[in-house]
Structures are given as structure tokens and as C-alpha cells.
Image (cartoon, rainbow, N blue to C red; front, side, top):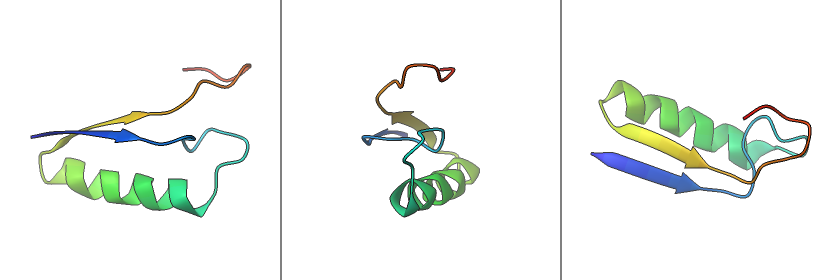
Length: 49
């Protein structure tokens, strides 16, 4: 199964907060269960992809 998460920010975003941490933790658990997770977020100037 594949899952696409679309969120305004990811963990590297300077204004990342609790929502991004929760998404990250849930995603890690899903990956451990064999689900392919892709997180789509905006690009911020100066941050690596």
C-alpha cells in the first residue's frame, strides 16, 4: 500500500511544530508495517530537499 501525506510543512521547516512531529511519528509506524509513505510539503529557500 502507498500513502501520500500532503502537509504545508515538514520537520525541516523553520516553523514546524506539533502537527509535523505527529505526522512523522505516525509515518514511521506505518513504514514499519510495510506501507510506503511519501510526505509532500512546500520547499523553503535555503533548505536541502
